Amino acid sequence: MQRNSLSAFTVLESVITLAVSCLLIFIGSLKMESYENQLLLVNTEKQVKTAIEQAARISTVQHESISVMYLPDSSYLQFKGRKYSKKVIINKKIKLTNPTNFQISSKGAVAPRTITFSNGKDNKKLKLQMMWGRAIDE
Image 1 (tube, rainbow, N blue to C red):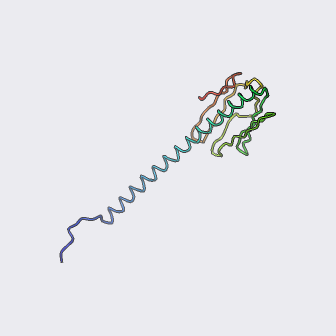
Image 2: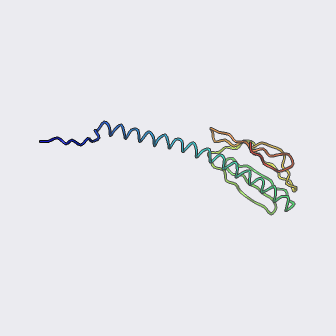
Image 3: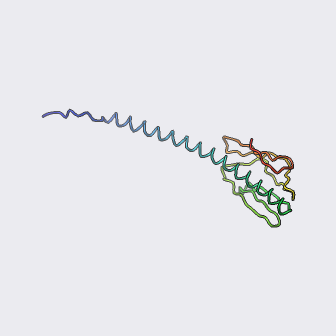
């Protein structure tokens, strides 16, 4: 009988190839999860910034003050005025620091404060400037 002269993968080579492939996929998924958490943090910060600036503009145009309330148990920010109401849902993975209840005056002014967003690993800060109602990323 003649032996087959074609070379093929041995069981050991197959196991090593499979292990390396699984390791590469696992590392990729870890990086993807980290990227997803970072993206969630940035998007939440932009969403809150946009909502605050929009409420400041609406309060100026409609000449009404708007109160902003943060409900950490329900995980959302609520904007309430006489004719304006909006709810911004915050992902449960993101924690906000110092968004305590505050008012946006009928001229769009907001008392200065810094709101910190955290996902446990990274932090982002949003500064509300004095009397401008402008939010600035830090």
